[in-house]
Length: 172
Image (cartoon, rainbow, N blue to C red):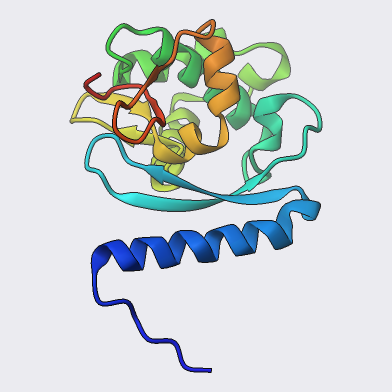
């Protein structure tokens, strides 16, 4: 079977969403889904494979490439960013959050570890560099952790008036 690419952008978008819907129908029983996310800062579209199973603490289910200390640090970063009025956190404040890490995670987590973790989180779209001095929540975090974000903000989450998706830094 040959596939002919649609002539217009609207037709292509519709074909992509139909394909995503068909894939989701087939992977639902595996507790997986594909979600579309839009970067709030530049409008770039992303498709993310999301684990929908509810096993264990919410932040620990997001993926397995982070250590316990990195997950704890991400939880602290995300909470502080979400509670900030402009949904941004100065890099120096972000680095100093290592002092708030609990349990055994803070004993081995240095400033260099924090810098490396922030870089890793930015590269994987969990966080985003907003400018030279600030970090914010990334498109992947919004896509995968929407329920946690809503819980963290006490249900007070704005939605984009156009796409109706969660908006943290957009203009409402």
